[in-house]
Image (cartoon, rainbow, N blue to C red; front, side, top):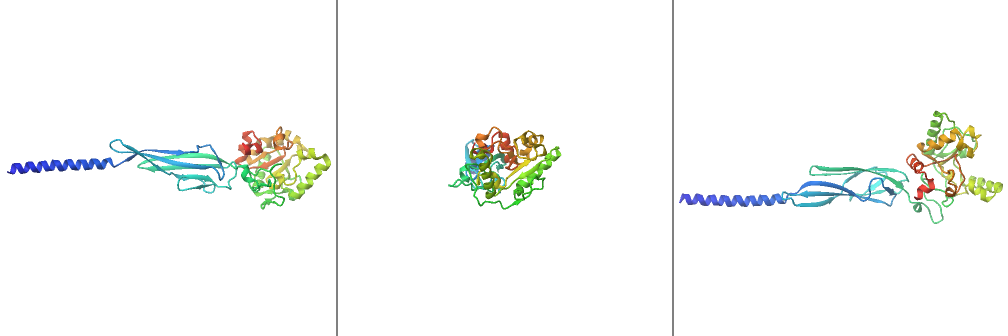
Length: 330
């Protein structure tokens, strides 16, 4: 009798143990561990981001696996780190450059995610571009005259009443007595001071001649050229009122003693002019009206005409070999 009871108990134990094993195994099948994490984006590093247009999407794919080798994938959004003054970032991993960010701005982004002891992190680099059609109204007047990347030319005018609100006189040597045209935008003036100091250290003395010009002053200059040389020639050496970069405050014409303190083509062949051509971009400036590009810019070669674009954009334009006009439409 006792022997039979013990046999029944043993059978019951075996049955219960087997049932527990099945339950335990079933429980293990429901457990998935992270075996891989991948980061994806639709905009690879090095791409151009158009301000207020391009949306960059980042996505995480997590692969999980259970004890039987069965896998499943899940989608998540990474943590995105960047300069929040330049970009807006949504909760679902989408980055968009703010509309006031100018052309040539460098954007650095880090996207990262971790789960189950695994992690992924990747750095991205982008540069920005403003679409020209977004910065001009129906009358052909630019809507971003305050921006250092504003393009003003014969097709893109500037409002007659526009005057920058931060004009200052740079602390450099002038060959000029008119106080109005000594002015530049504050950012450009500070950059000009650095450029002149660097030139002086290299053994070259530069002189500033003409910066900001209001609409009425440009009208007088333009009309003088028409009355003196005729309209056809005047349009190659002088901008019509409302079509001059000088009104933006981002320009300074410069010269040197070796050029007779004049604004003449030969300045580009002087030691000072050559140094400026080779080094201005390091300080945020370009020579806008280049030699051999008259059909593109609409103006004769002006080696004295310094246009400020900023320390990020100017080197890009210089190294591209394009005029500013070409760079902005490529």
